[in-house]
Image (cartoon, rainbow, N blue to C red):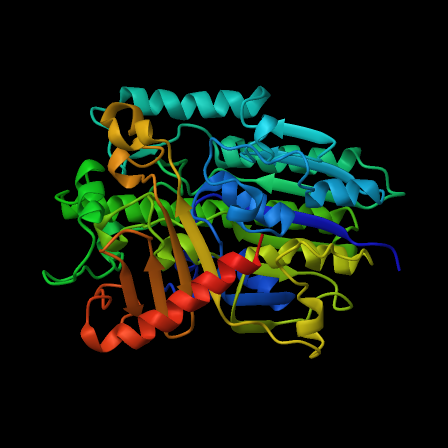
Length: 458
């Protein structure tokens, strides 16, 4: 049997719970639900880093951020690290990447023979249109919204889909292809063309609960929400932002439908594996915030993951409930094509799990921080609203997370205000239990897991 084509679709800043597949009753995503019937949905799938470039480099190398030295968007993937695209190119795959993949010297596009990034051609024009909308706005806040005045299939994400289809048409039928589309949505600012901008009525949206007055949260979290403009924002503004975020999610679903229909029309779908996920999540109203910052809440690190493909490679209509993360994608792809994953990959192939030969660890780790001091201490230099967090949403220290089905510990060496959440009793992470005396044993056990993880994954 011929090696399968691989299509990797990454949303930008999409949390798992923005989809009906993960229990959201407000959003319709029929294409992803149809893909799930042809494959596997991962219920508890995490990114080991909640910022763009580290998350992408982790996925492409199968290695954690502290091992590859990519702690933020300004870092560079070391030359000796090898990406999935490079490995596939070496065995004859035609490789192409399109969109917001953080190309250039940083490493997000390393190994792809064809590259069309967001600063080129039609994608540059559509990005400039969005920036013009920002410049015209009366104020810049993290929950900024606007209607994009172009048809959906000609918008930024629609143009990426078209370029992806053009790449496939350019490929030789004699060799398999690896196509990666790095979509921009639903990354803030929350911009969408009609009908998606007005698709969901803000009055009908279920808003996330908020923490009470004695939640024992780090002060920096509230400061970030204040600096981002959401802490005291009018409820109607926040509801509209969440409604547009959901509209962007639906727009992406329809773009995936365009691509799937194209592959079927070309007779390629039966030998193509489609992986749909995101680089990281978004607060999307949780913790009275939008966007992202240096925290490790589930809304930022728990992301969607659907893998669909021929039944010889992917189980059909299954759900994986155990915790796993994006380091497992690269070794899984290599397993499909009969290439042995190198020992330094931290992830392991899903194939032995699907075949009943291995079990998942049911634990996730993540890390965030290591921003330059100037980005943290200088409010003007550190402010990237509405595209990214304010300076108060960044930190020089590195925080690490261990997440089990019941507990989450976020620990920062030298900092007294760490966080512990009982996820079964408190799934929204509203009540920090770190300073509760009766939790000392749980904290000690989880800290040991963090230490073991960090020391054993270099």
